[in-house]
Length: 273
Image (cartoon, rainbow, N blue to C red; front, side):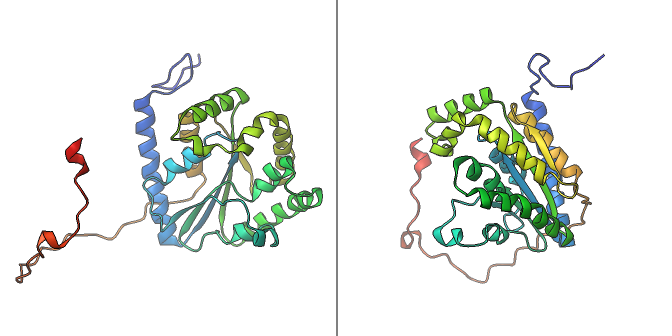
């Protein structure tokens, strides 16, 4: 007999809020351990997040990095290329964001823009597109041979769920910034993006750098599934932290604080709440 996971809603497959929060915090604690391992062992990790618009990439990155140091874990979310960058080798501006020893980098979209939006929207030529499909596996193999741990995740979402999320963002002034005209045009080009994704996978889903697909219709489940899987692929270990102890406060040596009226303080906004 098939049993549903504890804490789940059997009818919808959703997990309860309490289960989600508890497991999320446990996984975040493991990522802190990964961070310390990366720092101590001078490792380099690159995680590529790709997928449909509104599939949950950004939300997952946000949860992974919530308790991590920005000096160790960086998010690379590049804007459209400048005129100068358009004259460079295509991969060049992405390579500038690769990690040094002791760093993790999370690419919120990556060099795979050429295989997706640039291909579908006609922002690159057919020759540039085919050159990308040829060079990309070679480049990724070089990164791995140099010791970088490369992980690639594709976030999948149904057209109905994507439509629902787009409508939510359009109606929410706090999240409208997440939508762009190109995002909205993806609705009318759903099948074009599907074909582009399939062709991309054929050429770049390699034994050295495989793609892992995340079912994204349920955001909370997708986050936990992706985070758990990523942790399972990293050979990290507990790293002893240096013993820290608060020193005793020294006795006063006669310092007197300057009068308050000589400084400009932030108004007490909370007093009016």
